[in-house]
Amino acid sequence: MDSRAEEDTISYVIETGSQASFNALARDIYQAWSDILTPGTELHREAEAAKIDLSAYAGGDQRGIAVSKSAAGLDHSVVELVIAFLGSEAARAIGAGTKVVARDIWKTILLPLLQRKYGAKVLTENPKSRSKKNTAADSE
Image (cartoon, rainbow, N blue to C red; front, side, top):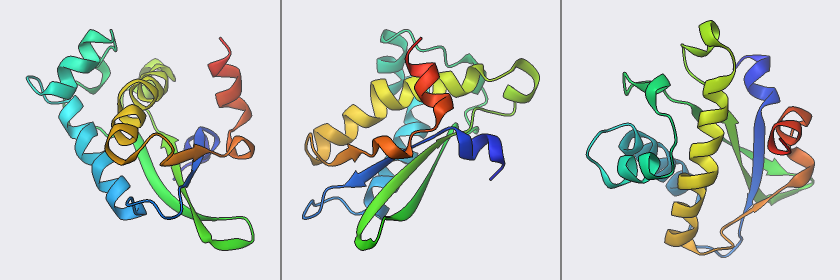
């Protein structure tokens, strides 16, 4: 992963005792991402209704986020799910705009989808993990 992707991340602690494992969450995120980019699916319609511009991912094979796992601090029984906003191949030519779209997809569709499926508290954002770049972008 390049340093630009590492700078554009948000970490969440997975609720202990939850039915959600890291693997289940990652699988659901990647499947939902694919559905969002597939015209005619419920999630694609939801993205369009939210006025999210999916044109940067028109090929349908670009992944705008990456999911990884890390231990949270000294307690290795607590697992963090790390979301990295990657943008797309087009981002190299047109700038960081696709990272903004990926973040919008995460906040507007993917995170609420996981919360509906596993419960509102399944993921708790770790505020210390947010990069300065994300904090500045979110305050715009």
